[in-house]
Each structure stands twice: as structure tokens, then as C-alpha cells.
Amino acid sequence: MEQLAPDGLLFDARSSMAAGRCDAAPLAGSVSLRPVSAKVLLYVDPQSPYSWLAHARAPQVLGVTPQLRPITLGPIFARRGRGSWGRTEEREAGQREVERRALAYGLDEVRWPDGWPFDSLRPSRALTWAHMYGRGDAFFAALGAATFTRGEDPTDAAVLAASAAQAGLDPESVEDRIADPAVKAALREATDAG
Image (cartoon, rainbow, N blue to C red; front, top):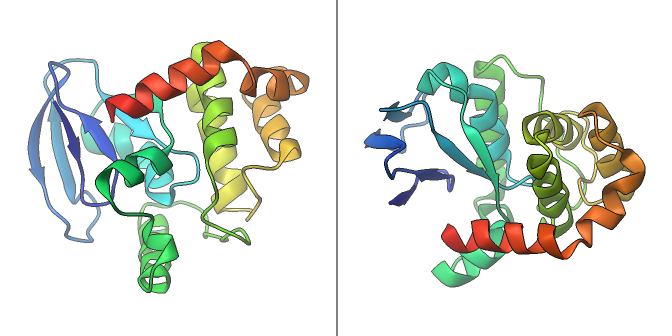
């Protein structure tokens, strides 16, 4: 059973973890999920600042390093009849909250990229490819830093290639992998599960 946390992140609560308390209090550790086995899944969208924050904090908060599951939030938002808070009147308050949390968590200062939020299909496919080759965590960390601490556009081919290189993947392969039917199918399957 998957549950949507208050900040929009999906946590898989099947046999891999038991959902504890999940409240919207804007405090460090406000999401309190206790793993009951070594397998914890963290569904992430590369353009989501809350995915970036959760990835950075998950090992400390959960006590285990979660397995990433790349998704793209657009279809999930469409199914649920809502969109990103980044496109609403809550944008400024939401950005300040992300900035506050990043500093509280010991992360670098947030620099918002021009044009955020983005269509995350390309970065989500690139992350799916990295995940398929066992480099998802490294790729996600590199792309998250590029996006949220350097203010770079995560849909840009050069940013994706640099993130791939930092993750130990061939930067010249990114565009081909984004177009790979197996990558598209894997992302679609994970997103549909969300």
C-alpha cells in the first residue's frame, strides 16, 4: 500500500515498511515512518525539491538507505486533479519552507532555477536509466545539487550529461537512454504504481 506524505512524496508501505505517523508539521523529522525490514522505497521526481530533501535525510530519519524509485509527478497530479504547489499562489511560501528545511538539514543554500517547476519527463527518464544501472542514488544526488543548489535547469542536456558523468555513467549515452523504450516503460510502470 502506498501512501502520499504531506509534502507530496510517495512512500511504499507494503511489506517493506509499516507507516507510522505522517503529519504536516514543518519540523525536521516531521515524517515519521519506521522500517520493518531492510527494504524501504522512496519514490522521487527529479524536479521535486521535497524529493531532494527526502533523499538527503532518509537514511538519518528512517535508519536505512531507501531504494529510489524514479517517477514523474505530472501524470500523478493529473490523476489526482491537482498540480504542483510551485504553480500556485503558495509558491513563495513553499519555496521559503524548502529553503528553511534545507538549512535545518545542513544542506547547501537553495538556488531556484529559472523556470522551476519543470516538466520532469526527461530528468525522470535519465534517472530511471541511472537506476537501472545501479547508479540512481549518485545520479539523483548530482542532479539534485545541480538543480537546487546551483540553480541549473534539470531538463538541459548538458546538466543531465554532467550528472551522469558524476554518477559514473557515460554522459554521451544520456540522450539515447532517455529515448530507450525499456527506460520509458520502467518509468511509466513506476509512475503508474504511484
